[in-house]
Amino acid sequence: MPSRVLVRRARASDVRAVRALTEPLAERGVLVAKHAVASYESVPETRVAEIDGAVVGCGALHVMWEDLAEVRTLAVASSARGLGVGSAIVEALLADARESGVSRVFCLTFEVPFFARLGFEVIEGTPVAPEVYAELLRSHDDGVAEFLDLARVKPNTLGNTRMLLHLR
Image (cartoon, rainbow, N blue to C red; front, side, top):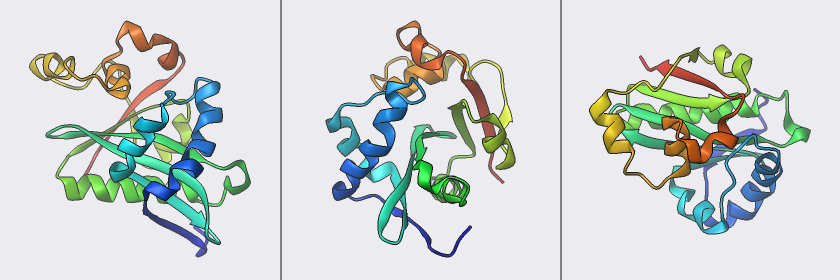
């Protein structure tokens, strides 16, 4: 990772830059589209990466249950790909997961080799007990709906791979 990459907690003032990174991916069906208000609401769970003061990447950690969180909204500017930005963001999010006390981190991704290099493994199905699944059905969050593989978000999940990392 280049020494000029800085990963930090997002601020409300970063939302425009985060949306500039994520909206093109949402248009292509790679990420779930979010309204601006949802982007502001997710600031506390978001990290951004900067190079020379410019936001070049973002990602979020969403806690879903007592032992499970999801890496979501991971995006890196095309100009910063290959510089270790994505890995640095995910490592920061995994540190957040450890600090939050979760033991497993989930992702739904097209970037299987990237996440595999970070220790994630491909899984089938939804890795929660039936009673937890029933509770998660109460969530209005589209990311949780994707995790649960609900029909209303199927267009967002087609071709994605479910991966899981057990934290040490």
